[in-house]
Image (cartoon, rainbow, N blue to C red; front, side):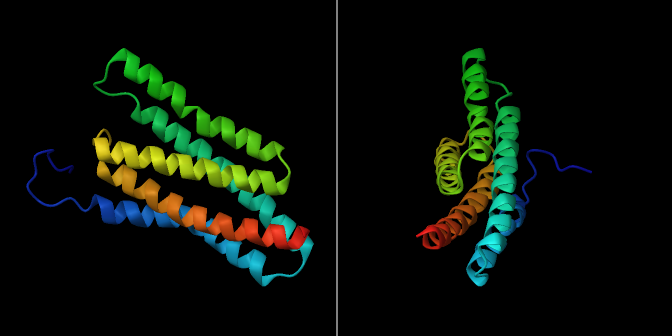
Length: 159
């Protein structure tokens, strides 16, 4: 049975949300470890393909979450603006899959940084529930660090 909105008990959402964000970011962290443990360019290439596909899927999922969150007791103008902006991560995901490896990983990092900045703004304005932002910020933080490690490995491998 769901709790009423005015339930005085403390919400446990941020803890669960942080765990969810961490779980979604785990494949990026595992990939970062994998590319540094292997010395074989073919294995690095395979891991990179998985990272880019998973990253694109994650961005598309984030776009869908943003799109769904745009609906609410808001003005038509705000809904239209938020829906329009929510397509940008999905568009970035398509572009990422068409780029060579190093620019693709760099764009993926940039997309996660922009998502994080958007989520911080959302959290500060209080326009979306805190658990939503906490989950996404955990995902962004772990993903960005992991992707930077992958990018470093790629640059060392190519150079």
